[in-house]
Image 1 (cartoon, helix red, strand yellow):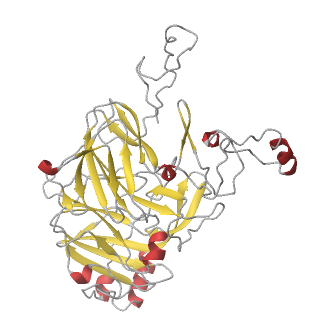
Image 2 (cartoon, one colour):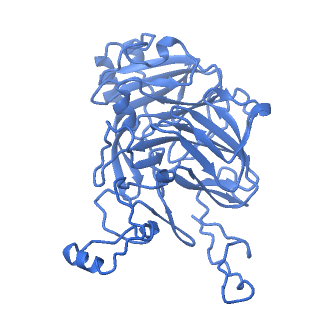
Image 3 (spheres, helix red, strand yellow):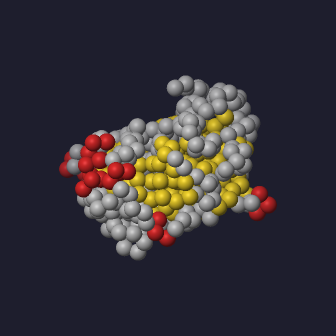
Length: 447
């Protein structure tokens, strides 16, 4: 854990730590304290107590960085460092990130703010930070070797610029990108409108899309991988570790996300159509917004959509690439559908006691069986719902729309209690008419 004392010592040994503006050592001695990640669960942000007012976002499995006001500057402090991130219960990964988490904390400010961002490097190699989508001076853009010197281990640099537009942005390194982004170095940067009532919503969620290649039983990503990823995550979390999105019935809801993987992602919400309202290029004027139920996020892009939560229930929210809603899987596994294993399985079990026949009827059995796994490995399909296995993994969670949630209450309200007659049911084929509809057995769970 980093303290003010060792950060000051590190700053004193740097060569003034600069990014377009020189910072005196006396100023470095007054660095704002870097906040440390509170853990892998969503932290609802408080309303801002200093600076311009804004309506804060809620980062899935994340948190927003605190700041301090110093004259005209809103000051933040990011520490680039190795971190351990719980991908989901049962698996942790050795990543790189900021302030104890990957992704790093969400930075929130207001259009027109002057921001000063201190960056201390605790990695074993140099780094920088690029402020993706921001309009700023070239020397603050964060491309190592092009627009600034690299931030060497132990050094602290500072970036200073005014926020010229509101919208949905992100930050990530522009130094040894293949390694540093593959290791999880990224974060959200949300710039709110100057008028807090402009584009106002009741609930504003945000996350980054990232992916890792981690061998079963291992904990460190394969940074040289280009295509064969096996952990598809939102904010470095995989289902069932991704937070749900609790929403009050009648709320206007915004969901923002950015894609820092090696492929595109068609993000799909069940139960609603929505309007695409923002990209990393800025807000979409109301007259130009278009309706969707799935919005594709290209590599390196931000998207945001909005909807009115007028349909109560538990609504699936996921990437629509089917392999992206699975956890570690062997892409070289042969298709065994239709292969008759009768008589063969007992012989194999006598030789391999833990052997299980898989795939002759499809892969749905994976959601129910408890096969042995290497330590620190997630099952390919997992998660239990009120009606049985959900058979998902990776980029999947649930938007939970409920009547009666309090404003600002983001606790998981449990499973939805369906009104009678609104659940699909089995028909008795021997009867002339459908069998009586079963009663609803799931209950609301309060947390």
